[in-house]
Length: 501
Ligand code: SF4
Image 1 (spheres, rainbow, N blue to C red):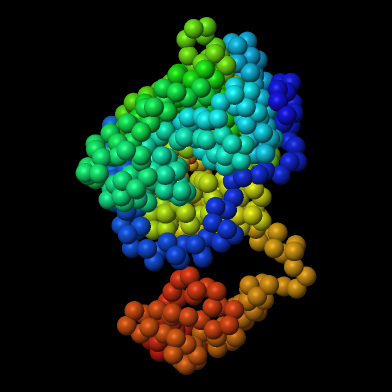
Image 2 (image 1 turned 180 degrees about the horizontal axis):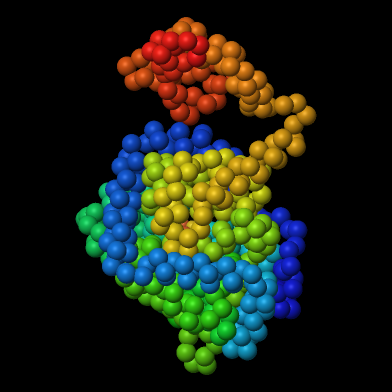
């Protein structure tokens, strides 16, 4: 599929299963994958150090902005209004990009997007491309699709390069190699970069210089560049990428052909709206006051920059998210990753445990919505619901409420699938029966009975029960339960005040 008439192919809502997005590590659910990650002490040290550093930087620069909360309100209002008229704005974007000499393509899912990009690269006759870091192209598995077509994709962002050389998977939206420390990266470069200085140290400047030397040849010879987009301005047809290293600027300006793959939600209506997000994004993501490189381009300019400019608009489940009134605000995300850096769950498990291209709190709400809850059912539970993610989100996405909404959706789906009641439903019915009668409740509360029952399973020093029997074992499989007190409140009341409790 290639060029479509303005927007109508995707919107209003179409039923089309997304592809890509999902599990990077087989079909392990989050608790299983997290257990492995938690056992890796080095990983936890790397993550703890990196997230603490970014968190502190963010807090400092956000504290400098007096109207930070009003900026967040403005961003939320702009994004809500954008989603409310997304079809019209997409049509406007297509019209403006086309008028400026670009070509717009519409892809309903990852397979269509990959086929479009592969076809465009083949038309150039090139067998290699340079890439700007892009979550959308990771989501669709573009590198793998290009490799299948005999086209080599070279990542040029330093952290993405590290992940690619290690044949690893990214574990953070913004810092894909956050799980690796300097010594591990030095060892990787020494092993995989051709012609690297054998005396290479783990000094960050030396590592960056080695990567720069390796990449320079790629930048100067590549005929095709591939990028994502942080924002697209509907009123002008302008696309934007923000980055810190300058590799993006090279990819966006040096090749003859530039192909951008962008999720349909990345729109803002006007230039004025863009101003709000360019203030919020760097402070929330890297803890910088402004992005070192903000690249903006509108179509084709003869003799200046790429002469073939393509924009692939990707749905891949987004219209289904748009249709959900509660989940819809997930599409407001600007991928700053602030929610990852404050999340106590992410800080301990890292991104791989989520088994999804999008890790952390945003991944826990976005991935199950893109794929359908059945494919990422454990992710909405990968949270303590502490609300730290909401506090830092620059577009005020109410992540905890959406997590609860998705948990309810999952429970409803399970109920529909089952003919017999689940152990949980039986347990709840038994609890209701017990708790609606004073005598039954009093009997059940008897600490001596509970103590006898649980005595062997109780860690008396820590005041916790390590494992409960029967179906209750699932609860203590992932957490400790508090040890019942030696005396119930009712007994205490009876003893202190006398009479019936
Ligand atoms: S949900 Fe909010 S905090 Fe998390 S990545 Fe998206 S914009 Fe940033």
